[in-house]
Length: 184
View 1: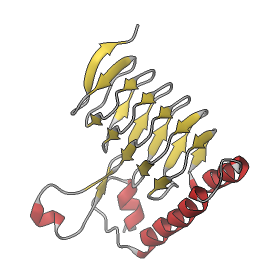
View 2 (view 1 turned 90 degrees about the vertical axis):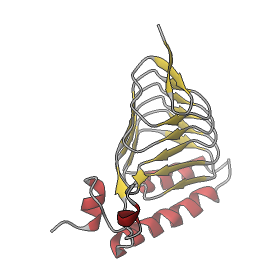
View 3 (view 1 turned 90 degrees about the horizontal axis):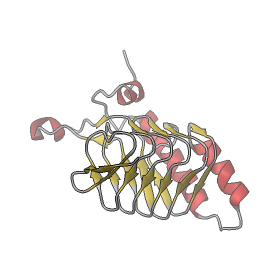
């Protein structure tokens, strides 16, 4: 029989109130508090916290305040930058490539819920992985929805709501986000 953590990571309905998941989220909140309490002069301490918090970190610079649901399901490549007030809900795997930059207020959200009210009110949750390729720029206030893949060398416009996969080498924007033009 699968644990709730195993169900969550497999994209199956799971109980978020499971004690193991609650403890993992509490750990993430403790690390968020420690990270967000650092000053701009404590770059080494920030790096240490991110290494403990995330599943894998190539190199990252994240401006506080930052919040992350679990952290252990986040994998970031080299030269990752995330500006102020960003959120990653990593109930599923979040893979972020090299040279990715996120403007202020970006939300990367793997968590979602059943659409049928009768099922939703019983409390189970779902999660779908997100993959962001290399050399991606995500504009301010963009929301990356569960299950989305963003291709390499792509720019996502400010305020976009990315509900479907976006290919490589494009500029995409809007709600819902759609390809505006190809990048040569």
